[in-house]
Length: 328
Image 1: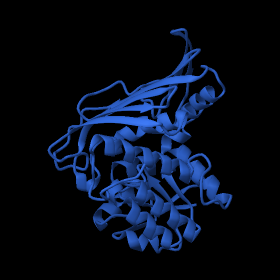
Image 2: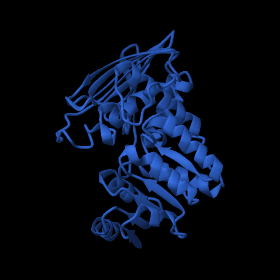
Image 3: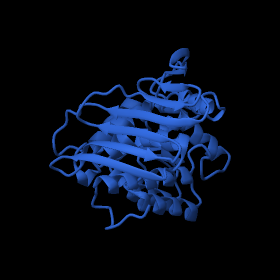
Image 4: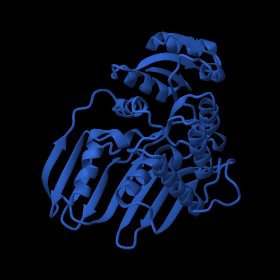
């Protein structure tokens, strides 16, 4: 399948490297607002065509599917334009700035009968799949608590994408999405959410602490750009616990505990970054004529962004794309 990539930054480099691990995938075209950057990227990853316009790539009849690696503030606009040109889309996470944008994107995919999936690559990593299967099989009894952190010290300028509200900056959308995704993957939609954020001068969150209430279970989650954390997650059940070891969103090992004692650690060898697993899923769906992945469905993404909106509203984190009120 011929792939196109737009937004040729750090994440696009990782994705292009992962494409090489998928025999049936061919990087055909890349696009940047700068022709020089597009040419350089195409040369490095052996793409056949380099464009200085996203729109031109969307109109290329040889492109089957497009990966969108731009900052998330541009995801909705780019994905919708690509889909209106009949292109299938894999869009980097977060797929949108809020639930309303995400819904518009999925509505467009349905209207144009084209494939669309959020690139939540964690969902497709074998170690994460195994941990989820263990929980669902009752290996640790009934889940009662999840603890997950994701933090690092961000050495970035104040006006960088990391902090800039006009580029969707802040820890929640960048890295907080991973603990949130873990919690809802295991326990679903919370009954109640409490969130507290440390806002910087740009009014984006340097840190955010979250407590999800499920009635008979809790999830304690946090994200931060201020300190290097363990980036681990533990799922506690009535008969044991499962720990997704560093870094929990791409774990190479999963530990199983009984009565606080380590029973077993499952090791997973991973080629490259692990991003190739979502590429396999996209191509599998396209070959089957599907416009939606069952593993990372439209409803999965819509729930994720509904919960992220809920967290942001409770913590007082707003972006220009938000309306005055976001219903949850």
